[in-house]
Amino acid sequence: MMNSDYRPLFDLPRDLAYLNCAYMGPMPRAAAAAGKAAYDRRMRPWEMGVQDQFFDQPEALRAEAARLFGASPGDIALVPAASYGLALAAQNLALAPRQDILTLAGQFPSNVYIWREKAAQAGARMKTVSRSANQSWTEAVLDAIGPQTAIAALPETHWADGGRLDLAAVSDKLRAQGGRLVLDLTQSLGTARFDLAAIRPDFAVAAGYKWLLGPYTLGYAYIAPEHQGGRPLEEGWIVREGAEDFARLVDYSDHYQDGARRFDMGERSGFQLVPAALESLRWLNALGPEALNVALLERTRALEEAVRPLGVTCDTPERAAHYLCLALPSDAPGDMAQRLSREGVSVSQRGARLRVTPHLYTDDADIARFADAMAAAIA
Image 1 (cartoon, helix red, strand yellow):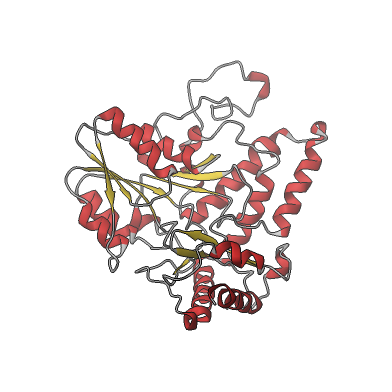
Image 2: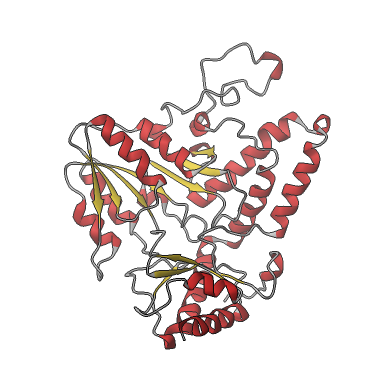
């Protein structure tokens, strides 16, 4: 594991093993303090600097998010949710009758509903990809891509079983067929290096409250340069050229700010949210995605080894390093998550799998607590 004790950076009680980052990541103490300070400033609006609060801080946040995507700041839009970013993608990608939109079986709903609607409007088809027990999601997707695949709307990590997609391989085959790639990275961004040059998504979005350890209602969307002249969902004042000059806001401009900024949500400055999110992203970027990925893999492996004697293992081919979805024995209780919660262990249950998602704050005591609670629950 990384040679630091990260637990004191979070407000985690010692009698709790929080293994549920895929549900919601706890904000670091420093991020929460930045958010509290922001609320204090909001009580005194006359002390709030226009340039700093409306423009400089959101731009600093945009720059930190861009580092996680491996992109330039101008390629990033500030959005309130993954669904918002996916709606941007749906609005700006072409789709013809009888073409296919490809999604995964059991994929998170936000990356399904918008495509159902788009397919219905265009007379196109939804194509749901399933995998066999010994097949990876990458293999299943590659088999499914064909001449009629117009859009592949995918995650990098499947939220229910932790399977990881080789998005570079998917992108290569999709591009060869003329298809477009849209990604929901909510369950992966911030846990490993995202190879933008190899993957080449058209659009990619991540909500900020899970692995990015930020506040709710703030996320980040990457828009490829070729789509940055597209149509935003809103026509807000702050994304227009010259918005910094409040005295001239009614000199209405027909021009947007550069790059993906035209796609920013309304009230993107988020006075109470941006400082907390900025603190968390700075911390993650300082750690470095490669080192973080190695450390999270060490933790998930240790957790899996701790319960292997109980007959509980991960059966997902090519699982993501930070994501452990354990297949439960056939005679395991149906309320495993609730039983573990009573023993001070927080996890999620998705069907017959237990989703166990640690972070750097997870230590040896947490792993031991998890193993003991699992033994008691299965016995």
